[in-house]
Length: 427
Image (cartoon, rainbow, N blue to C red; front, side, top):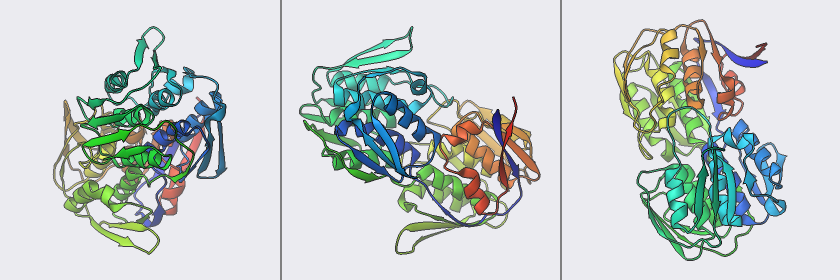
């Protein structure tokens, strides 16, 4: 059986939606919990497939992992009995590579299936390996088995300069270095909110990490960490997706449980396109209200590392701009193959031309429903946005990609007045 979304488009989104915990933080924090050597309680986790996959991976390695309630996970690593993580679930998700730094820091050894995930262009782990070797680890890639092995009798602090800004490498090196002997200095690091969140979690476990969110992170190694309770930050990309969907449907939506400063790049472009955005605080949490009347104006976007425009919102933003009253240009500077959604949007009547990393969008009056297929997580979000704003029925296939990163997507959108139904069909 396969599943697809049936979307009856053209409905204005109105109401209130609450954002879940950040996927990109959760998938790093769950592996990081093994460094504690004791039980950790992780709160505000999103109910997504990647979280379930990591739960299964750690359980197979011997950890006790249970949900105490819907968004709260208890991770007890004390019974981990193997450093072998080469089973299929590991290679199925990109974020499994955080087990490299976590297991190496906790046990001095790991054998890991090379990770997969969405097909959005090459994402090599050479910067991860370079950094781990600088800390004193022996790292070997077995290409015949598609496995990476790392071992270190003792990790020692080092000065490491990343050749390019990498979120994954920044986090992996933080994980490994927080129990290394001496000080580690990481330069040219990623500054994304989930990098800061992982550093805050490690510090709650007793690590000494300073500078997360800046260009240089300094880590003073600790011999022992301890368990803690920690709540994951709200999801920046889910927030942006609902902001874009509200504008695309000419809606009026209040988005709760957000961190407005994380959204400044997307807020600026939506304002430029003609949307109205109000930031508020109800005394318990921050919220953003997004309202849109009429067609958007075209805008130009270049994706960049944080605090620039996030690559994960490039695809949903392009879907929104397909019906702009003027032309737009989108330049993808992070991943090579992040225009896989373009041919699907064209099926809906979009006018988009692509040359290398640049997409030029000639705004059309409206999109029309079609039978389309998501090839990766954020492409799936883009097609949802397109389907919500289009006339008629849109069938979005590849739901398994969307489930990796969005909690209860159809329920949240339907509560705002959308019409999205998950349908099973025989293959």
